[in-house]
Length: 294
Image (cartoon, rainbow, N blue to C red; front, top):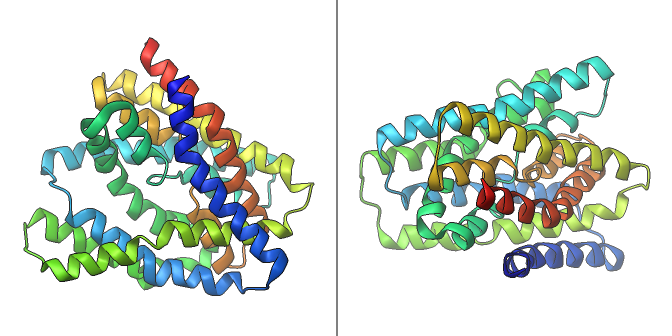
């Protein structure tokens, strides 16, 4: 019961900011594409750089994290692609909605809540490759075949590369610049969620069933993938827990941001992401219970 209440403490601000965005859309009009541009070109690079330069990363640990993170993405993503191909699903959000999970705003506080600093460190390590997968493969699926060079135009990808180099080479960064990046980065998640809520105004009732399918598969296939990885790699302790928390996370909010930027059914993508957040209120306590019992 305590876990449930603490999880609600984590999820409530997410739902509250999203609701504010929805209410604002009733009152005033905004251009969601402009907000998506701010997220991708201003706030996301700051978050990527700030998050990486504050880590102490061992090369061997990073290599293991890359292998695990790739599997966490590729297994559900491949199954989603097969389902999409066989069933003839035309919505471009289907595959990336299952491939890309929320790797920061939910897993980080959950890991800290359930497993302390040790659990948080493992989740942070596993989420590093997620950045590169999101801004390469994720963009490709959202934008289509014409997007092959688009990732290289994304400041967030270059910021992640730079942050990783700085961290691995232990290059000192002036404190004033770190403060700037940290302050900029704090605006990312509120702006993402506010924009998401604003876009929910255009969701149709018929979108709900599809959203439940995508969000449910994201969490369900994520759980299946986590069981496979932790079993075959014989992972234990906080690393095992980190794999489950990351793999079972709902669809990434960036799915909506990408959909908005590339004209890929922004309203439907917003519905998928929001539905995933609601599902996580129920699925997360069940995942934590499973980890405690096994």
